[in-house]
Length: 469
Ligand code: ADP
Image (cartoon, rainbow, N blue to C red; front, side):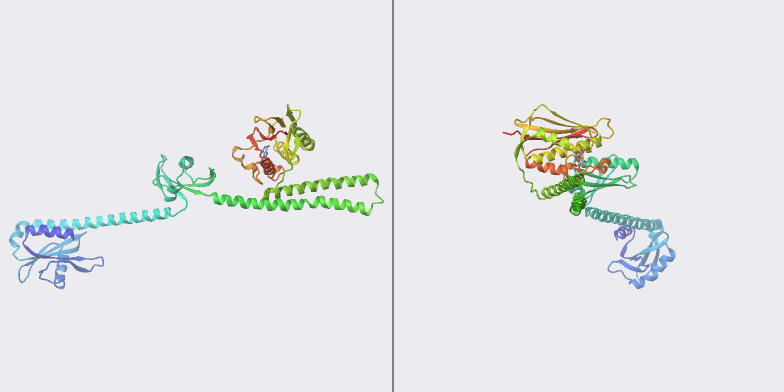
């Protein structure tokens, strides 16, 4: 409309025009009046034949009316008449026309050009609006996601983040991992993914190359809850398996005891003394095995309910180690590990639950043997007993040159059923309960367990107990 105003303004400079009317063709190719000054003498129906005329001639023309003249000025777009500007002139245009014919031609050409430009401008505006709408749509969509999304360029500059990313407020460590992944993605031109534990939280990262512009999208999700659920489920499964396995293990010694006892009952009079004694020894051995199984089961349930009770007495730590040494002879042979006790103390009498502390030493020592390093020509485990740095205490350490424990697993080895994932752990018998029970026992004694370990080098497990008064 503004264009028509401008054209009319220009026309009025050259002609004494009483009033104007503009007809325009819409998208459906129907004609309609889009502007009509009051006092314009012709109605829309009366103007339609002039439109036909303009379409035919495709150039401006004048038409005499009863009074005055009608100026017909078509606007052309790509050679087609798209609008017609009609002007009602009261004076005779002939004289003026002679001198200014080219002006009208120019106005006609110019208005066509302006209209076309305006249409193009509108199109551009429309597409910018569409783009803006799309941008908003995607932004809302990305903001509604739980995953933290960030987009990075090749120089590791952050070019986009969604709300979750901002909310997660990633610390330096997290950003460092993201940047590494971005670099990797630029290098291998591929998707990369990673699960990582950072400060007690589990994160899952994934990258996608965006193409043009060459940028990398990184998604990050805190999967701690899923991991915790997985862990609980796994623990529950292991616990069920443990109970069912151990219940199953009861059958073998029980069946043996029953069979030998029945034989003795049925053929008591005919049994010679030596055979009878052999049968009794087997029954006793199997009873010991039963007792051991029962103790494992009881320990497990005490561990579950934290109901372990201590019987405190004074006893010599050195003697306990010697007792353990006797019980591990077969194992030492089997695994070809040498064993030694190192102490400057003739006696190391401490106060605690003797049986339970013996159990802890047994567990530490058998672990030192079980997790030996087969690659090493000399494999050893030793127990050292010495005065503690803290006055009035004795420290016992079980040291080995075995496979060691990876740094990140150090805290976990005391969890119930936890076993470090190595090929050796699969071949070595174990339930992952030994250290958990040992920790429970030492906790009850208010004694700390100190662990030092280096993968490939070896480990040392120590605890201190108060000297007997
Ligand atoms: P188990 O020996 O029955 O698997 P433990 O609770 O005694 O269970 O030990 C837990 C895990 O800790 C073991 O499976 C092993 O991976 C690791 N571990 C314990 N002691 C040692 C050690 N001296 N050297 C290397 N790894 C050890």
